[in-house]
Image 1 (cartoon, rainbow, N blue to C red):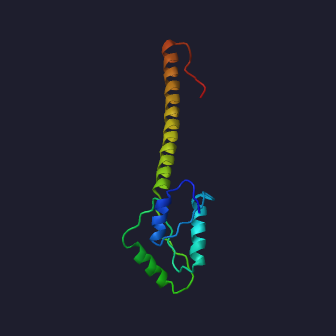
Image 2: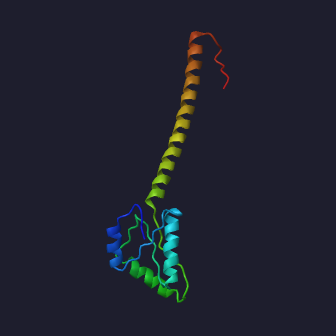
Image 3: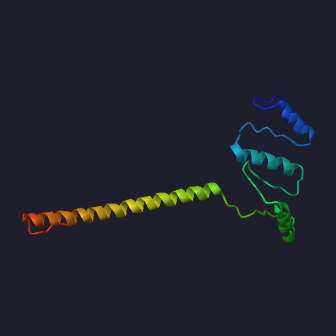
Length: 137
C-alpha cells in the first residue's frame, strides 16, 4: 500500500514490532481515527481498551487502578473513565473570568466617573452662581 505524506521506513519498523498502523487519511479528524482504531480492536475481540490523545499524561499506577476498578464492577460490559482535568478548558474559563471582571470593573469605574462628573458640574455651577444647583440625574 502506498501511503502519501508519511515515513514509509518508520511505518515498516513499527509494523515489524507487531504494531498495526491504520491510515485514516484525516477522515473525521481525531474522532474518526479513534473510531477506526476502536472498530479494529473490537473486531479482534479486544477485552480492554484505553484511549489517549497526543497530550495525555497518566500517573504510573493509572493502568493498575483502572483495571482494579474494572474488576470491581463484576460485569463483562462496562465503560470506565478517570476524572479529567483539561488545562485548556481551565485556561479558557480563567480567561472568561478575567474578561467578566474586566467588564464589571469598566462598568463600575464608568459609573463612578459619571457620578464624579455630575458632582463636579454641580459644584462648579454653584460656585459660579449660574444655577440654583439642581441638575437632572
